[in-house]
Image: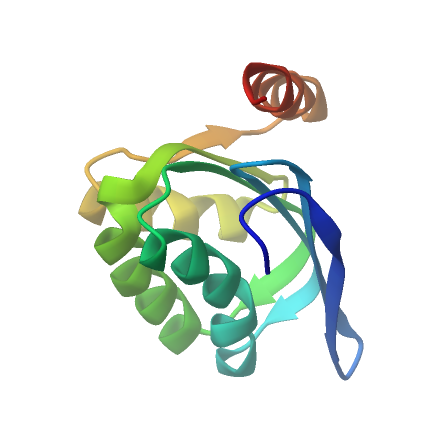
Length: 137
């Protein structure tokens, strides 16, 4: 994935689907539908880790409004790898509606020192996305 804008990447495993796009340079939008299992950790984290490897600071936005659940192992690994990326992340926004998913994100956020801005409403998430895109060249 280039550092600027790029095409959409999609990963499907069973009925679950991850879509990753770059709406602007330094902005990564990931939309997930279904259950987050361990097999999705690399597809979720790799685009972010590639940006960090280039020394770039970026904004990451995760639309998990259609996430139906997650494996504990996936949550632990996503948290561990997100912690390693923290110096490169200008902002981290996550939209989730499922109460169990929101609880898991809240627990992970304790480890990440409240690094994630958790949105329960789409309007706040969309505003964060619009701001991130407009702030980039």
